[in-house]
Image 1 (cartoon, rainbow, N blue to C red):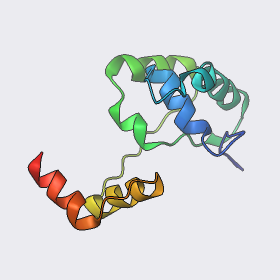
Image 2 (tube, one colour):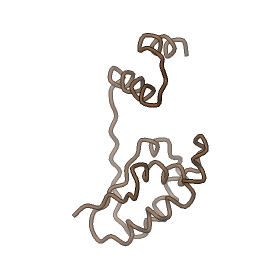
Image 3 (cartoon, rainbow, N blue to C red):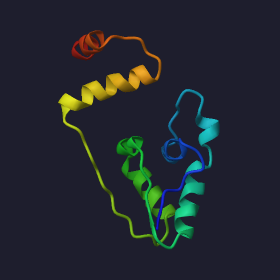
Length: 115
């Protein structure tokens, strides 16, 4: 089988915050130790494991080295996916709506163009 190590819906998000020591609106305490626990679970698994979150896309070389070191002898493959800009903007607006922002899509686009 394939392991997706997660004890909660945001396990990979918190692990990414921990790995990269990112501040995120007070979630730092919840994130502490999450990467090491996730890496331990992967090291203990004999089959394929998947670790995935978009925040890993901002990882520096130092973060990548720490992640690889913590995974031990695991064979690591990195898969990158990206959307084209025409799909990225509506997806970003939708994420904002999910997080209770009330900006209309047109106002969101205006804001993006102003930046």
